[in-house]
Length: 305
Image (cartoon, rainbow, N blue to C red; front, side):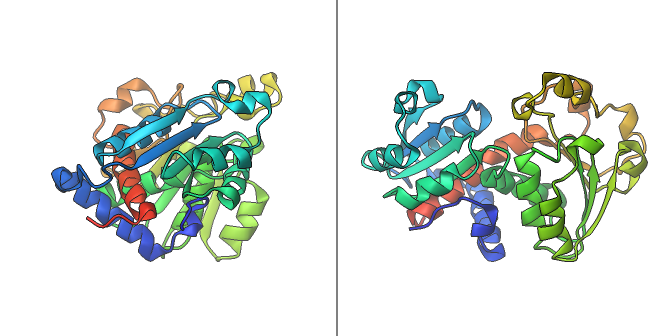
């Protein structure tokens, strides 16, 4: 039985195969519409979510399966003190596969140790978000046609942004990647990721606080939200929340084929008039999330189409 807790649980070859399956689903949806008939997905979301939870549910429904679960911890037995391990043991009696989001880092790993069915980590605190990374990779492949020889700007909250951490892990396995890390000093990429991933793999990277200065060199710009829920101090959040706001004016020196990504939800990091720019790919990115999660569900359930 396979789980997906961290993006590195998948080999490069497996990621390429998932991307290929997702592209086939996009091209031939009818081929897959009954692939998971009589299969059930449980969505256990101990933390609020819109896109991730609904895209998992839409993915399973479009595969012909059904969905059950909860969308907040206080509507589950966790509010009575039930452990994660007990919850998944019970839910595994009712469902064939579980997608789980939890505010505590490592909770999906604990779940995987006790679950009788495959566990998908749908985000654990500031740690990992592997299916968002698969979404990002599918979007990059569809927009740029490759995963290598790219200059990737990561902007905003690099300290707590689990989407950023997972994407760095994933792209560090490809050749010719140069990371441009754009953040205020307080939200720099954690030292352990710089040391354990970038330096250990001899990756090319630079750190800066000036988005406009590096804009002309970027192939991909990955914007992130400064996350109020990760801060202990409201004053720090208010001081940092508007550190970077992407506007059309800031894009005037960007490449014509720049790919602008954002895991969403957006607060005000990207001006709404940027949405009409051909380089804005974040709503396509959200749609791609459904297709890659369909491919992942098929893989973890061992369903051949």
